[in-house]
Image (cartoon, rainbow, N blue to C red; front, side, top):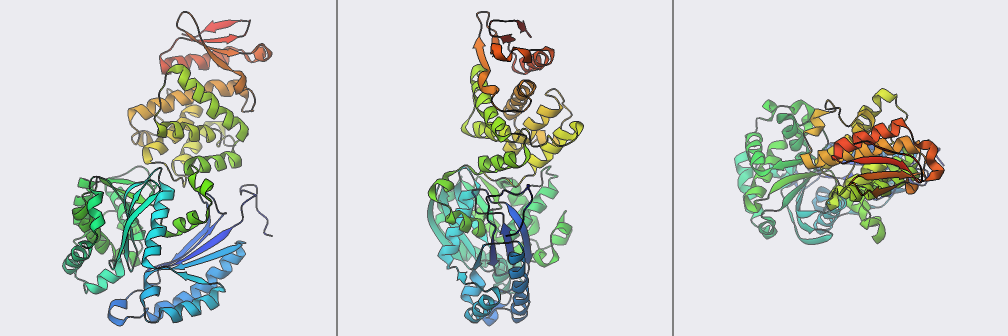
Length: 511
């Protein structure tokens, strides 16, 4: 048994996945099987197994040799991390090459485990599950572009509809087109004409999965000076995507801003990824492109969960884990969720379903920065939350979560807080994040971040229209100037007349 620090969840048992793709081979070691899985280790090798497969029908021999060496290392790393299970998945190149079976047999001997060679249908299914697992909920067409194939599948909530596998992976398309982007465009258009399901995606979201499209999105971020370098749920408007893709599809990627952040081995495939995406957009007419960091691997993990775990909210699950690992009291965080829910109702602050989820998560994350120096708690919390590997949340939602914590620590009227993050959230979300933070600033002075106090505090309406925060007589000693001052801040934020009172004792109006 490998010892772990208190920064790890003690009830988790590590597992690893090796994903053998047509272009890359990747090892991912996870902390354990969970609704929102956390990576312990992640390494990839751009092997290029599928390079030349169109002309030779075989896996690239040099890539095969290099892969075997890497499999040895991956097996050792998996063992070193204490992974109790190793799952190995192989996709297009391995299933289609003449020498694929021999390659798989040799790889199984090195890895000392069975390799699951996915059919095109299985690959599409797991890719769809990956998208389903990462969005709350997903509704559109998911496209997973690998080195050897493109999987397209219709998703609506948890329902997986029609799907198709096409030979449009970056390496394969480059080979079929003999390095001609004009020819690649013709091939992509012809192949995508078979994907009748794209017509059903008109006006819906296209979910882009796969390394080539993620790198394209990274370049789009750079070109637009986007302030948040988080790939999952990055959105590109249809008109912006068309102009950008047109530029990349010209093949002059070295001139594109931010290209130095893309590995040289991947750069040659970017124009082919752009060509395929252009043709998908022409056939589908989506409302926007949304990038998914969740794909086949994550979909496979999701399939291993039981039905109850699959239905769990991935954002809340991840926030719960951070609260357990980093807050002073996870029970206090749960108290905060309940108390702020009642407070929002008392103040007449309405919430959409997603806004209620975000408030829930923000309360779980409210105390994760407590070990930092007081002057940096807000900044540290904001950075952790804004850049966390959360799924099930869009970028405006991330801004809500991060700003609620920052305002809680650094002041609800501090307009200098993270203007680049504030730019991601609409005014309605900013108002709710500020109101939530103002409530937190009141209640933390009454609880000292310890559980059991908040359930005893209640809001009462007074005849003069004021709203009173009432402490029970047994907590009368918590009454004081500082809580009254924080309540005055909350009154300003919400434009309400508020009163701090003790049952049967003193009260003070703060507005």
